Amino acid sequence: MAISMLAGTVVCGEEPPIKGFFRNGSSGLSYAGNGWSVRSDGDRGWVSLQVGGAEFLKSMVVQKGDRFFAFFPDRSNLSHDQQVGRIGYVADGINMLRFSPAWRKPEAEFYVGANESQDQSVRLFLADGVTVTQSDPREVVLTQSGATVTIRPNKGTGDLAAGKVKDAAGVDRLAVSFPCKGFAANAFTFVFPGPTNPPPSAGDFVTHARFDVLSSRDEPGKSNRFGGAADGARDPIYGPDTRLDFGMVFVWTGKTPFNGYAELEVIHSLGQPHFYQKVIVANVTNKDVRIQFQPKFHLPGVSEVWCRLVDSDNNLIWVDRYRMAWDWEHYRPRIMVEPDFNEFWNTTLKELRATPLEPQATRVFEDHPKFEMYDVTFNSWGKQRIHAMLFIPKGATNPLPAIVTAHPGTTGFGLSKRPDGVYGSEVKQDPRFVTIVPLIRGHAPDAKDIPFNQPWWGPLGDRDTYVARSWYCAMARAIDYLATRPDLVDMKRIVAHGGSQGGALALVTAALDPRVAVCLSDCPANCQPQEIMENYPSFGPSKGCVPAGKTLAEVERALSYYNPVNFAPRIKCPTYVGSNIGDLTVHSMGPLAAYHNLTGLPADQKAFYPGWTHDHGSGPGLHEKTKEWLERLSTSR
Image (tube, rainbow, N blue to C red; front, side, top):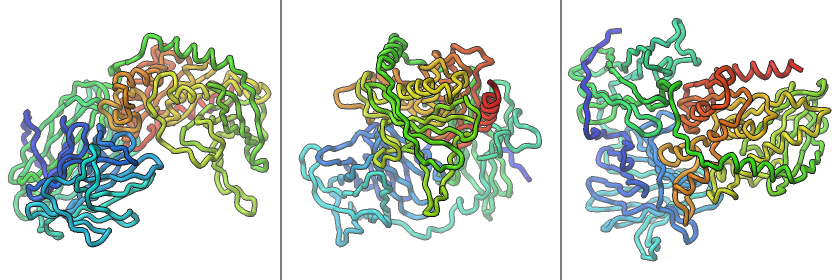
């Protein structure tokens, strides 16, 4: 492959405007298309929609009954697909308002969603001077200074409404109202002036664009030690001694030379600028092009690595990103823990165990061929009756080792039987272990009214009544129940195991109960909630969920009593933490912070296993360690 090496120049100062890219800057999101633009501002969400220089938007709010929500502190331009950098959303922890511009058409999808069952409306209050035409509930036309915007509901989405409605101050204002069903996708299309079949541009002649990053850590003969190259980086775990050949490549198929620039922007996961370089690309006529960068890293932890190719008219031609971990061994998290943290939990456990357990077990699915299964109930925090699923391998020699695991999305056994009596789903529990799974929200198996996500992080009340207190106690009570079954369980072989929210619960369980022999925590969620609230729009608490009468600092202090990272120093058993550093669901620095706060363990009893894909979960390192420990415990006595 012919390679063009182009000189690089580091450019400082104001960020260059790019058409076709959502810039996530310090003041908000901004996007410029061909003839139109959209912008958010601070915590107020979307505040501007301009077409042909004319302003169409005054404000955008969510209305639930007589309540208005106009505080959207979370924002991002990330996505799980190839829309990365080409979408922009604002959110408040429950509601999301997202624009996804089409790549070649003068239109954008506007998605509204609510992570709760209540139906609501999104109000687009129009700027002064905008006129509305609506002859059909499936189409609204807005006009301002000769420019027009047409809005249509997508298939399966409710009808639009346009007219005057009262705003939060009780003033009648002209608005377009978008229906928003809870726990559902609600999508609409904004159509802007412009050709539906635009003439060819530089983007039509750039193909096979990707990162091309070689590292001295790359294993010879393997594309990636984590299971295959992606985004063109083979091993994105770097250190001060790592040697990098850092570039991006593309194939130019145009008949005239390509002119433009490429830029490499690296942003630390906690928001700090990490590196920026701009490379001018001038008069490229050869087919295969490689642009060379010389990144210099200095911030330990995980960073977002962006690369963009832009033509001479400032149109985005290509964008991609991956996450890299630099010098993660020397990352030191900012620990926010209150002085009475241990006293609070010691008192909680004392009060918990002053309540009689009073366990009961009811056999279910009695003809299952592999497991005896029981719906177990017992008393937990505040004498709340907790249900747990108990799986006992049939034909095994007791006592057996046991796994304690949970996930707040679990609602029951998840089994079904066909009319002929054959089970239609497989039990995934390990047949070498007794497994107990507390349904930590205190609901009966297969309850249909348990929402999956919220209220994991809410409502954000005071410290003593926050719902996670009962969840954590339910995990300890599950081990208390196992201790009542010496005929069944070997209490010296207890495993705390789980992924995502279950990974967080595994850490907490091991911290609260010294009977745990090993902790296997896969991508623990909600670690470092203060970081999630302040600068990382992932699954977890949001500034938008801070209750009236509370300050952000007060909520962060309350949540610090439930931060899995703060439990880590209490853990005395071998503990292994894993995380994909590219995970878009879990705060990528949280699991790393939990590992570094395992201060009560010697080096040979703890490890961190970084995977690197964008998938939610951990890489193969933790998976191998998990298999090793389960094999060890299943064969030992």
